[in-house]
Image (cartoon, rainbow, N blue to C red; front, side, top):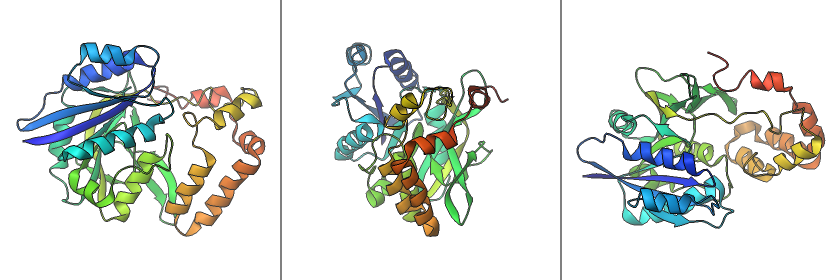
Length: 300
């Protein structure tokens, strides 16, 4: 019997969390595969924890401090999961609604690739259309390893990638035994990208699995740090909110670790954000019309 740990965290979006868990528990699992579900509620005030306990008592629940964010919460869950020596670990975001055969297909495809599998991503699509919202990406240029390409469209066979999103990701035991778990340096974002790159540096391969595995709406850039229609004070507050944008010191750590030969240039570019955030925001502002053109299912 293969035992997989599914790890997800939540904060004040009860309906989405319950819908995600419902789709997870409706999975048509292959014979010989069992799941343990680990959920960390990072201090929700909307009754999420009580609702989960009542509706899904089989879920192993953990409580957070309210300041753990995605990376901190998932790191804590992974530490707990490693005590039970699972055969694989699955990241899942609580705003995902899985297709009923998602984990069965992911299990099947991961068994067909190299024995140096580091991670296999199941791509998400926008609600209402088949546009990929999260999944895997490739680096655009060898000399610029952090030149993020567009989201990859799944192919009939697994395809290699350089960057992985944590919305649905399968990580085998052997990879964890070699590389460990997420880096505590990161608060919210970048932990998944960093982990994938560390897997690659250790000689493992990252793959995007064929097909689509569930729906998950991408984060809109409207009302974000890039929205030039917002007051500068609002954009500065968003820039300093770890849930809305990567803290500059964490980005500087990331480019130092993974930026290749040009990391000093990337580091200096990030330094501009640190010492002159208003100028940095002014240069990157876009109109709502331009931002909206790239959101959701607007491009089909």
